[in-house]
Image (cartoon, rainbow, N blue to C red; front, side):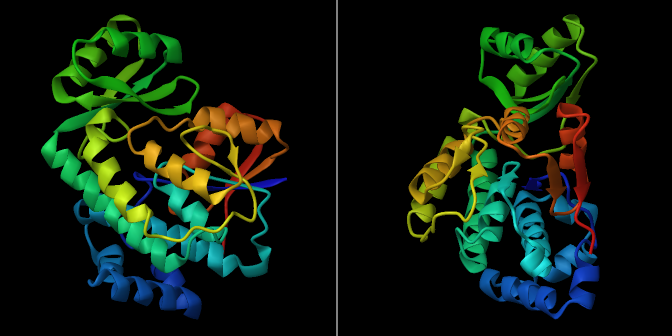
Length: 293
């Protein structure tokens, strides 16, 4: 059974979606709708902006959301998911693709989420780091022992976990994890401590916005980051989206749970090939690929 997976920040690249804009009237319409609703020409930034332009959280999240949703809409009747999941921001793309929220409301939510997270980064500076080659439990234990705020933020695949928190605390955690034979401890080029308690102000801002948006029950289960388990009703989906902002992305657990429930083919909808690479590390014998137009 097919599971569609939607990427988050880090998958973006300049010019993404321009081929869709030029080739499909529906894609062009959805790009122009985004420009109108957001009040600025995000299409131009996506198509012609620099790598640095696209790294800004408030641009990155919108760009990836627009690209992912357009791919699902172009598929039309071929888009018949049995399961969906999104990595961080990708949850909002997945929810739009399965009709839980409208494209227009999704744009508003992604915009609010991005701005709220950007504000939180400025209010409480932080950073994230990827830890390679250690068991999850070892990373969790080191984070707990640090005097300062540092937590596990992304369980991406076995042997790849991301930590997040205060500048100094993350630095100290990386040094300790290297001493415990981590293959690598890499500071990530992101603007703040996403999926950590430092995002509390963003969580509150996002909660106020999400309460204004109407959610429908999904046409298939969505496996959300907060629980890694299938969710079927709109009220739980809302709660989990809010909690996700300060909680870890349980991607390894999510993919394993979809597989246990019958998912045996994973199709990535969005820019890049990050998620399918993670799926292959979690389930080496399972088919995982990008949707090709």
